[in-house]
Image (cartoon, rainbow, N blue to C red):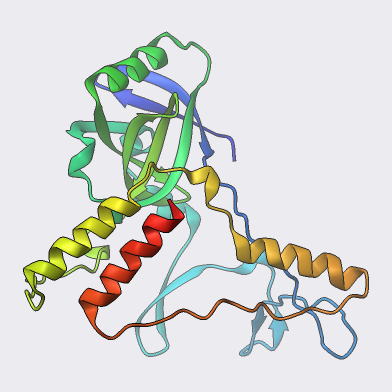
Length: 251
């Protein structure tokens, strides 16, 4: 993805390139016919006309009651877009810690396109103020509110979920534990506290799949993974106390 757009910042317009900050790490598989290992085809078929349908013969339809649709073309969708929203329009600035991580969706990197003066100025303003911009823009025919922030020496843009998409309910904390258990739990948390080191978090399952693919190519069998049996203790305080001992031994 190398999408050209611009940041609208007051009366300042900053041309930028939008690129995904995330690479999908999952191993992809094709669907095959078990009988002959032939790759299956995805066919768009109309049961009414009893025929295959080409892409240019497809429209989107909204079912407003059983088997009754209103249809939309791409041109009609484009008519519903505000011209100003096609750029990344900054609305306001907020303290980044006010945004709960549950609202974050996808991550993108914004890089300068053409002149870099205005871009560099915005980047430095975000860095020094330690604020994030709230903006709105279209990505793949959907309107998003986004956060624009400084991080990893880049301007990073995160799309946000809408408030009605986040299914969280506030629940009162039930105090069905003792103060002694709470103090021991906090000790365990403190003992296990470390710096965030994303380079240490490996996708072990995907690595096992890659290793299994290599083994199957070379005619080797796949052996099941044997996990270590974990000891469980019914008494909560004793379980916390034992966990703390184990944590101290690992340190």
